[in-house]
Amino acid sequence: MNICGYYPESINEGEGLRSSIFLSGCKHYCKGCFSARTWNFDYGEPFDKNRQLEIIAEMAANPLLDGLTLAGGDPFFSAAEAAAFLDLAREKIPELHVWIYTGYTFEQLAAKPDSAEYELLRRGQVLVDGRFVQELRDVSLLYRGSSNQRLIRIPESLERGEVILWERTVGLPV
Image 1 (cartoon, rainbow, N blue to C red):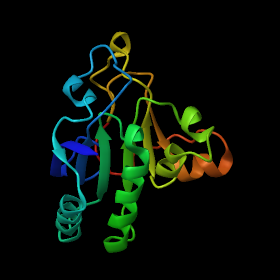
Image 2: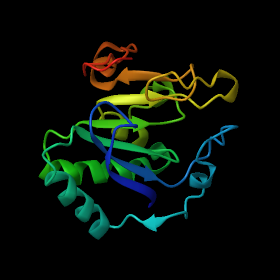
Image 3: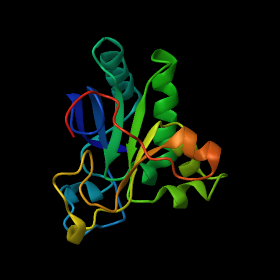
Image 4: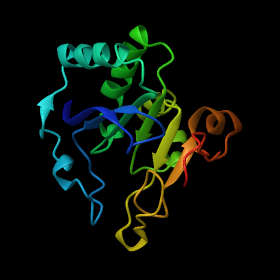
């Protein structure tokens, strides 16, 4: 697994101040994708255990962080490795709050409970789902690029068997 970007602090990929890691590799090939170079699984740098531990230590040392966001590419194309990274991170940061971006829908991921993709899904708190659709692009949307994409509360949605949308909790204007 490679990463093609890492931001120790970002306010663009989820609520609050988050570390954001962009995993290389995507097969959705969305027309108008703002990061098409990340489709290549070999793009960027290897995300080996040493690099993972460096990032985890940096996150653990930052008392201002609200969580971590996995984006890409699409983390679900490296689901087993991404889930293992989250497990490693939670050894040092047990209450790590995780957002995950994907071109898959929640329903597609939740329908395969014996899959690596489902294992990654259940390790997150918020899923930003759905492919980017250029014709539905809307720059006024919070944390997403097109109006078909949803912000989903993962644990509640898995528990109830239906999509429960995420709602903003930080007191900022929408």
